[in-house]
Image 1 (tube, rainbow, N blue to C red):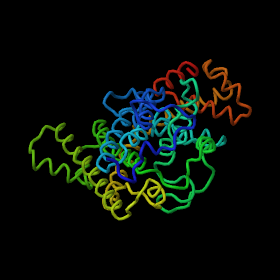
Image 2 (image 1 turned 90 degrees about the vertical axis):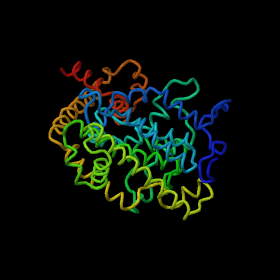
Image 3 (image 1 turned 45 degrees about the vertical axis):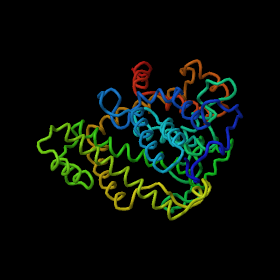
Image 4 (image 1 turned 90 degrees about the horizontal axis):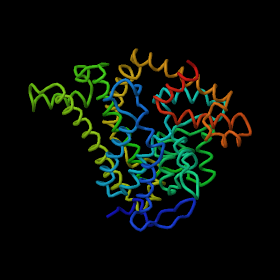
Amino acid sequence: MLAPYACHPDQSRGRLWPERMSTFRSPFQRDRDRIIHSSAFRRLKHKTQVFVEHEGDYYRTRLTHTIEVAQVARTIAGVLNLNIDLAEAVALAHDLGHTPFGHTGEDAMEALMAPFGGFDHNAQALRIVTRLERHYAGFDGLNLTWEALEGIAKHNGPIVGHAPDGAPVSGPLPYALAEANAQWDLELATYASAEAQVAAIADDVAYSHHDLHDGLRSGLFTEIDLMDLPVTGPAFAEVDALHPGLDPMRRRHEALRRVFGRMVEDVIAVARNRLEAAQPKSVEDIRNLGATVIRFSKPLYQDLKAIRGFLFTRMYRAPSVMAERAKVTAVINDLFPLFLNDPALLPPQWAPDVAQARTKTELARVVADYVAGMTDRFALQEHQRLCG
């Protein structure tokens, strides 16, 4: 039973290239399945969040992170009577456009692509699902529904007009986003569906939880450090009261699962209150509310800001992480100009794209597609092979 403001599959705006309806699957189920079977999705298993892929088997990769995001999205969407399949599809696609080496790689790519229209991983995800996946006879990309493309483009809020915090959005659109939007208007000035908003908050929940896990495992901080923080401190205190003398690893898991649960329960409670107040009658009402309906409460949001500030200092900018950031930034900085100056070094299957590039900007975008699609290990291997 879907809520009236959910995305109903029989009311989908369809696909850019019309296809016959599936006998067994809804349009959004087909979107989800096509994303799972894409090449870009498989590559996520060797792309990392914070730590480089070879540093440890227990750290999250983009793939394990994406699976966790999808699980949270399904849970929240189900409780709110939203379309679970669409929420899951957007969650599964949200990181397809990420470069190797996590946010470090993206920072490097943004700097390198600044003269050529910029680089944005959300826009790159759209480029992948509308153009770069080339497996189907009738079209490039995955030919996803309009609702899935909309969710990928603006799950974090409007792209033009005003951002969720009310600040005006200015500046040119990333070229990959402008390209997709010119092909099919994604209504970038409005908010996305509630399902896409669920995928966005699920991303926040997942990384806020697992970055604490990974930081503890790496030894960059300890449980003692977390006792002074909001949310985490009370979680550990509760576990200690219920299970005194618990094995350290079990204690850690029990505390962090409480942090995880606190975030999900807060989102659901806030969403119910906002939906009750707004009384939306359709998904169009959700898009035009002028604010998100899926968000953290203000008190929890402030608590999570404190936790993220701690993680930024103790994990994302830790000396050992920064040293690795410098190394992998050098890898991207070496590979990109190498391929740009000598595109013959690109694999043969990229030759048609190179041949169609009429300007240096168009060639740079081909090179960016190739380098951004690399996994951590492949980027390191190519750097070793080409640069020594």
